[in-house]
Image (tube, rainbow over all chains, first blue to last red; front, side, top):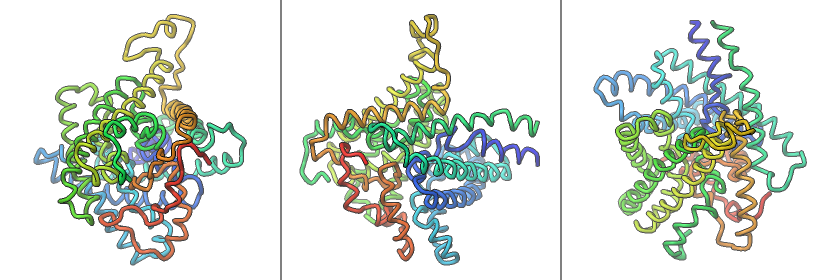
Length: 196
Length: 268
């Protein structure tokens, strides 16, 4: 139980998906211009991440690993993610139209979002148990959401500020991301003290 | 794009400054930020990436008449993932240290937007030879960009270059700036370099109209300059039909004509 929470919190705060592992940076930079889009993408990422972990983990543990086919993980995982995205999109469109409107447009883009494949690979690499893998995916998704949420606020402020011409747009955004990343460094050590 | 044939040498050199995939197109940022803590990591990643890009461009442009249009994206992804697996094996066998330090970013080459983007934008409508040139140019641009970032972060962050001590930094009066080797430094160095390339491109290419890159050709890529379509995406999403991966993977609103009129020269 304690290990589960340790994984959850350290993935959200210390090994934050975007700010310290650099996964999903593309969407982090592209979609944080306004809060609504960034939240839509975040919901989609959390959903797809949990669902594809639930699918890829058993495939790796019971199908690939026992037969020495571990090297196929990249090919298999990416196809599973693509299929998951398709199925999820169809289901949500039918069953939950409001949710579909919030995240529908972002779903196809998720297949090429390295955050999803990256978290699947990290779960395998760290040889987590199934429950811990789910926890780590949930944490990664929530950490992504947190980073998106915070950064959308920062960028809103940045829009109205007066900056040199050649730093306008992306460069100033990146430098702001760097400062946000510094602030997340402050969390290191917190988890060890909390969970021993 | 490429309706007017351009020379092979043009395809080769355009990737270095004018359409530099990392600093100008801002694609493939994740590995660029993560692995560039040292020059050798940056170079290694660049070479692995270039290999995959060249091979995938060759395979896809050779098969461009065979792959049905409606399933092309899954087909491309499968081809790319297989090539990445080959690179993984090669690195494990011949450069185990590099494989260790690059970690999961080798398999993640699969979802690098540049590769799928080049397949979609170039390889599926050009011949094999032109595709090879395009891949070498783009790969070279990406590799040089990674090397530049890795070199800067290693020199300033650790005081070494390819593991060799730099004369004035360790022993001399200058102390390494440790934070540049940390994630925060990655964002900062990248930001400064993007600003520098903006400035360079503005000065060199601002008057050439053909320096326009069609960003709508990069499926799944979301960068600072592709977010314009997402603002209109909100209104479009209300009643639009699903955008299937196997069909048009790019939302219809991402292919707006206004999108491609952004030349590197004009910044918002």
